[in-house]
Image (cartoon, rainbow, N blue to C red):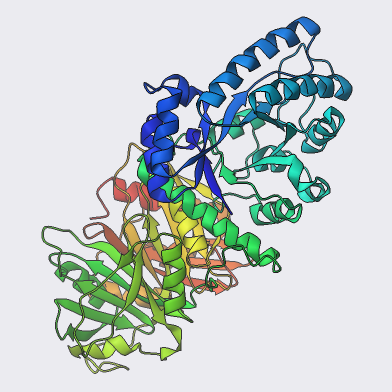
Length: 605
């Protein structure tokens, strides 16, 4: 399929946008009129630049408020149109987007609208320009693609067809299945955008909150499948109005956008098994678990102390690198001092267990995730990995390797697997989740990366109150919950949010008591929290007393209970230990403000 994008999706001037689109790998662009109006280049220069870059100019947009008007207004609209058609030809283009009328002085008549579009088609034919009529979700009368198609049918002109825009169709809850009743040759253009599920005015929703495919709640794969079944063979084009994307680096956003179209074509291909011309990526099987987490720093001593206090066992030093391994149950923490000069402890990498590491890396690379490499010697196991949008290195490990991954054998001088003769058996069994802080400009790209490249599902996002504003959070997880990645973005006023690794156990109180005896400094919990807890849940006084003594936090819902505690922060990372009782499946969101407040006051260090 030909891949296109509207220039309105990107930041910068028109020439910057064209260069970024070409570098990302797009085939063509929609020229958004305001971008051309403010450009220093003439239409001929824009056309020549696109030619040099290998880009087609696919659609000029928008032409507004044309149809359903009185005769005098129609004549003025035709005058406007003729000027635009002449401009379009200077650009070497042949297609213009005409939006349904949103003005109040409009006639509610399909026949009138059709007759006026026929006049426009006749004018367009003189210039070699076709008209793609689009039903805006907030159109005065024409706000449904099915009505727009009836009007196009009535217009009955070869230069008049329809534009289908996923946002205008799906935001109104219109059934896209009837798209298949439209002949493919009368679909002149297709625009695509995803969006989060929001309850708000559709115009504001459209203008500020659209997303690239795979980042929102729309079923775009099914939408595209309906379109392609008509025989449509034109561009699939992104038209995404989003305040973030129009502020971020144009080259990176263009690459991000193309990744979404690659993912979408693959997702649509799964619904169209007979279409051998569509791109098919290696299958995305979600990770089956965490293989390891890696914390990197110039000096990891403080983190080693934390791990020892939590009951982890030192498994040895790497035979060729300044790297140390600690484990408890199936939880493995790698502490890396390589290439970490002047760096405080921070989460640098995550290893996931997957069924087919090579296929997963291949898929991620086809989705334009950069490959990452680690220096290895002949006797060492090479790890395959890619970089997430925030720079975190994601390694794919063979899930069939057994309890201890083969790379563990490269660590020497530590305890063998099993109970240590000098340390108590830790109740910690595995990594429960890894909480990752995302830069505000990377958040939506990260969601797309983890869903498209790793096959994780995106849960409904939530917002948590912090001392400096709301913290946006969205959990990426495998279906059965073996892998959970809460992604957080802090408010602009705060830079204090830290990454953290949560470890699962069957007896969090036992871990807390052992850790306290070993000298662990817990994140302190205010007394007011326990007074509120007693009022909320009616817990027995003895239970509240135990929780208070150990700085434990508590939450419950209809499915079960959640008891957990936090360590203080070392550098940019801290640990959490959690106990899930019964079928509790959350993350203690009600307790997050307590943690955020304590960390903000400096009590987390």
